[in-house]
Image (cartoon, rainbow, N blue to C red; front, side, top):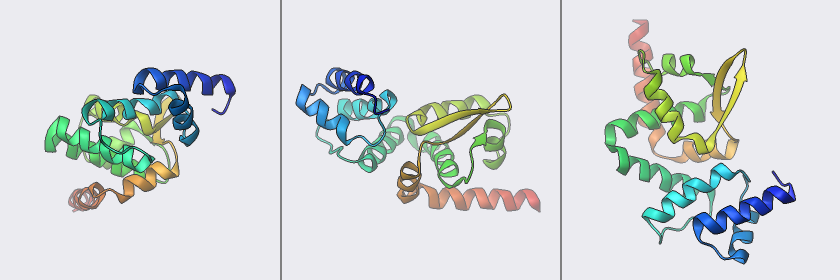
Length: 168
């Protein structure tokens, strides 16, 4: 990620997507903790809808991106999406699709879940284990930021209630 050719590519991408001048783009890329091309996209999305929003930290980007998703999809879809985000934030290990479906108490919602994972793709790490994709958050800082969001308290209570109902 810190390879000079990768940095140069990122700087050019930032200049194009975020309309920064070369010096601003260099500073922006230097300040990124995660130097992947994919991480630039949420900045670009947020800049398009709210050009005056401060995006100086990863926490500000994730918070504004989640607000964007809430406004875009409405409470029902956003509630499902935030459950997935909460589950991944608190999971001690990467989870396969069927494990996520089971833990969320959903039936046959694999395609819907793939949509949720696609919305969170900027902060996901996908690994293949025994020919099965597993999903986790890219790093602990993303997990910590999602844990700070208000979304997880109600989600975890709802999930726990559903698990208890299944046992009874």
